[in-house]
Length: 123
Image (cartoon, rainbow, N blue to C red; front, top):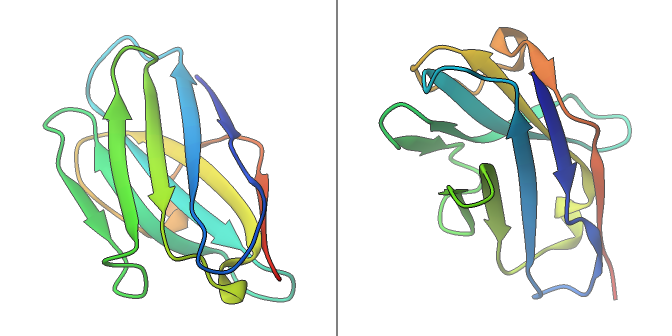
């Protein structure tokens, strides 16, 4: 299983980004994809996750209303749209996966990790 996260960049506060996590190597639909971030000196934070089996999703309370997770079936990628970006959103963003159908934001459950993509929000 391989994951590749991309789409990060430098944006001004109030802007938006759409991160993408391309997925390869799964031979079953029963897997979950999660998005996480880690800022310097802080713990890794679970943001949102998506169940590929049934299309359900969940969000951390801290990002509800600004983050939207979705699946692009044409590219077999899970997207994370981040609106109204704030300086405190600055971090390295990672996507990860595990075999299963439950929704979970605990990073220790995730087995496969993509490389991070940097998001920097500043004026």
